[in-house]
Length: 149
Image (cartoon, rainbow, N blue to C red):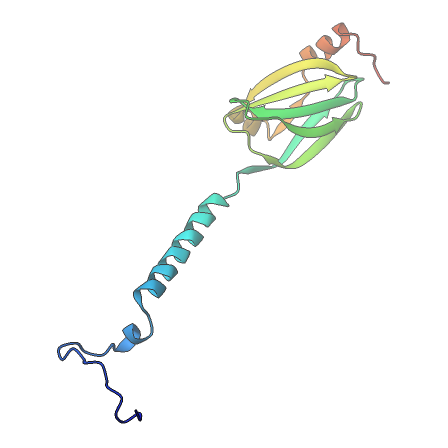
């Protein structure tokens, strides 16, 4: 058969040809665009970074080089801040916000100096500055830690 004599499929007389965007966009394409947009919005929520404190300062007036870590009141994992050399004050930048209650843990020479719980409100009132409490140093001395001075 030649192209002129090839039978054509019958057309629905009442159906109109697609116009405008319908000519280019079909339901599967529109559904895909909507799904991709929804995934992008959801990923923005998942990638939302937790809050940080721009600077936390800890003063160590002791004769011990201290290891300091912090966790939240719910104890959802410890964040090691790093060592505090003998008799120094150290700044820690962009510290993960621990919420309403911050629990600090102190160690020296493998000995436990204990934990200190401080409310976020008290930390803010102190300008995010703390000094290692005497009770931590007393506990280290009682555990047999030797001073480094």
